[in-house]
Length: 214
Image (cartoon, rainbow, N blue to C red; front, side):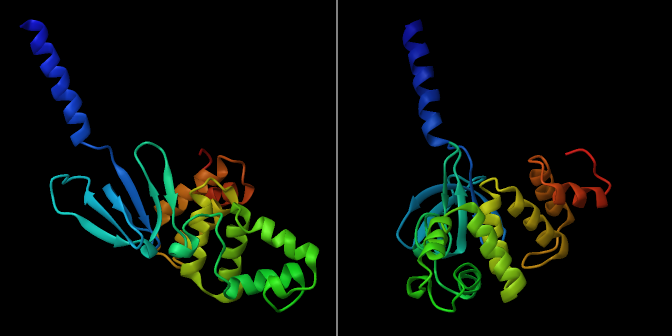
């Protein structure tokens, strides 16, 4: 009977482990973080419960509102511009920033598929899925297009994947309130992430706040 009791206790704890899930974090494109228990990811929406109320109602979010979901097991899903850019390796939407970058790299004012400069056009296609491309596209949104919210979206996408230049730039956007709610705390947090990777601009930005350890 004693052994049976131990087995029942073990089963109870094991069952409890299936009921209580570790925390997932949903980051929206406006910068909001939601501590959640993701229930389902559909074609257009996701369903989740609030982490602090696992027995409560199910909420929904459109995938087009979401930037990234970081799961408790360490995996993540990245959402860019809706279904069209659900993965960083999928084709990007051609807009103002793409026009600027293509004009710089290919030397023509058309879509890259119509550009005669095949070598640089191929280079652009090769670079486009990478973190550097997303940072360059964010720069184009910021400096050339004046679209700060879009700039933040692309800086954040690269920053969350550890790209130091993007982390520093995202910190700058938070410090100045460009495309996001102004936040010195978040600015310093992103500067520190970049500085730990040796980004000199981020190190200098921290010094202006009297921070020398990061």
